[in-house]
Image (cartoon, rainbow, N blue to C red; front, side, top):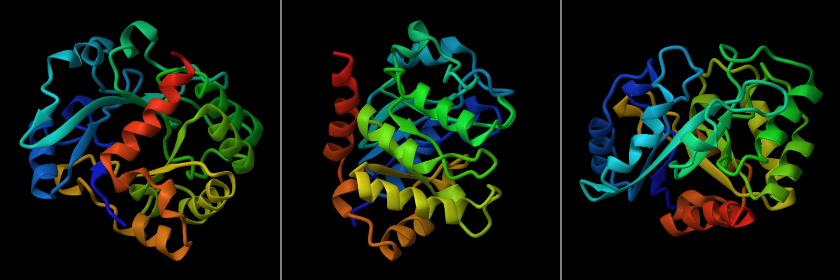
Length: 242
């Protein structure tokens, strides 16, 4: 399987990552990536950039060192109605958004509440990806999550930080397998992401790719295979709000 892109990466603007945008791009170039997405944490995360940082991304070149650049955000879901921490004014400049649940921003609810939070976040036109839904800290009804992702044209993330053996996320490997089974069942596209917080982790997808192989996941549902596949998937969501 081709693996030409990584769209879940963090820079020093996230407050707890360690490299600049240009250092992350240099790593992506060294790895031979065609596309890198910068998705710093939204402003509700302690130490993260203010909302103006995300609106100012227009000043960034969209190709650096031969690597195509997208500028997104890992949006923090703040309540069980799917509210995220950038409103339309400040999220409008983003190329994409990843919506995630983090325990520093919202306490875990019931399985129904957590699932509802993700599903309502999908209604946001800037939410293109559901981030690490495998984290058992937030129990989720995976069948409902993936069925709704299909309806909302939203990608499901297979997160390397979740599925590596040293993962700190609860039951993440077993949960990720269940999520992949549902994605295959409903034809929902997935994006493999490093969740890199340091340049050396850019395109660190080893365990995620091994999981795709072991579960015989359909290659045509993995957008990492080409830039065109990713851009087409993002457009599907955008077209719902055109």
